[in-house]
Image (cartoon, rainbow over all chains, first blue to last red; front, side, top):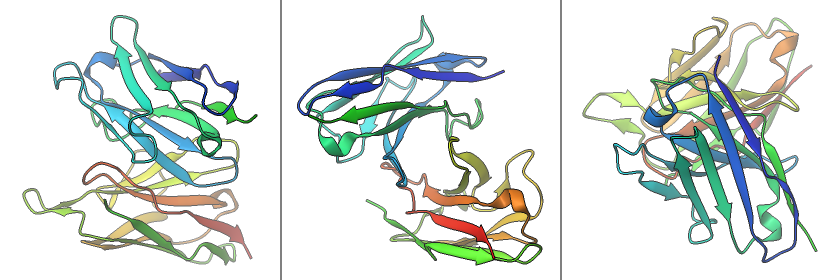
Length: 120
Length: 113
């Protein structure tokens, strides 16, 4: 059974940093492109970014609102996905989901999300 | 960047009736080399992550009831629920995956009339 479990969310002050983690199991993590999607409370879904496989160069891409502040990385030896968030803004407050969306070999799977609140 | 716009923002339909949600992309998401539309539909219920319903604009995900169907090509797409059931109350999102950033539509809230 595929499982994606996010952790690391919490309350952080504007300008602060936070690192989210996503523990993956039940599929070939090292072969999967992984994506982060966020959702502000009561709002719509927003694509944050993705990371390709090591074979594909671990290339990353980001949405404009987070580019230069967020960094996606992976540790295939631990089946872990990360989202390093720096210079956080109040508008970054959201549930953050990791997902295998559009990685057809893995199927479309989502974690339950972790909540990040940026507030003074 | 491609912008996705859904209509309507909310919709109330009687049980057993048809529900139709539209999605328009700011540029074509049809890849000419493989003739595939890089367009997906998701369903999200309160407190849950999104669930994939449709991909390649019209291919139903395994396990999704056949009352859900997707159509369209290029820039205009439709999600149709042929006979609304109570469990279909949710917010529905379209999303393109033609090129990054893979933008979502703003969502359509579907309720029972």
